[in-house]
Length: 439
Image 1 (cartoon, one colour):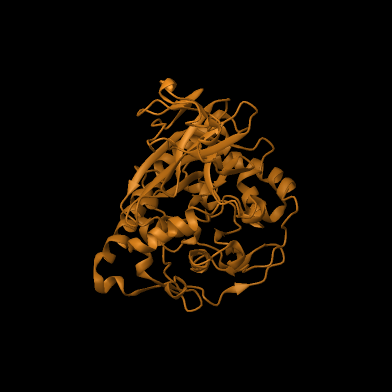
Image 2: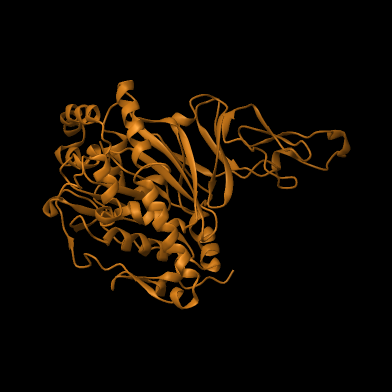
């Protein structure tokens, strides 16, 4: 495949993005090859696979995969495609099994992805097949504090290197309590006729849209009162390697959006423990008006506790899978209150989620026009707002309303789209905590 030079399509220093990256099929195919076939991607949470032989099916790009718990407690991830004629070997979303059997010819694979047997094996002469060589293609798998990641690239850096200093921020969500986290209430699938990047960039740091898009919805849920004013001196955008976290330091706003007073009370009691465990700064960050994306396609809202992955289904459609993430040691009534709050707000039928989906579809479909598609989009808000901060790792920009994390997400996208190897991808920030424990 002759790669398109994508660097001229991303003007991060000037603050613009070329519209073609949200529409053209050739660019999308290059994303599948250069990003989704190489990057570490979230595939499941530990809590989704509590027992040996539990499995969950998902996608890495458009490659269907099976995530399976092994008898020794480890997890394997492998392609959901029979090595005989290519059919799916598992059509279920999740479950527990000892083997996966292909519908076409009855080839059977274990939960480790190895070929265990053939139906009517007598039709094969001796020497026709070496079963040990025809198992399912395996991905590399690693785990960060309950989140399971996988990559098909043997040359990719370790997950620790890939996440880098962003682990300092991730621990605000994943390690604020000694029991860790879990997903509750099952998962939800939703299909949106939009480019997958619009969902990611919205969560990587677009606080600006909330004041307009979500104004009426929030007022309807909050006694006709709008969003609380942000403190520009205590709001930041933090980015590294395309991962981004937009946050304030008031510690209240997103928790309040849930509309569940008992959850606010729980976290206020938790905050001193968070400060002791994570430090004062990180205890203030949690629950502030915040949104997060992990490059390339995983996002969550700390405080609201919705967690999702954006699975591409072509340049003009994506599948969104979402869950509610909570502290495992929480009282059940608090878990339920958070889950109800998520369903009422950021859920396909939620008051706020519906606004976003409609906008992302509008953002995408307009690019069907040839003249429209040749234009640029403005990403220049806060372009001169970069600062140095003595506590916060990564590339830091000041102010709640800022396109900084979006610009740096697309910078990472462009860097990967034309890289021949991982060595070709520039390091754009100086690590502060890399290699050290984050808690």
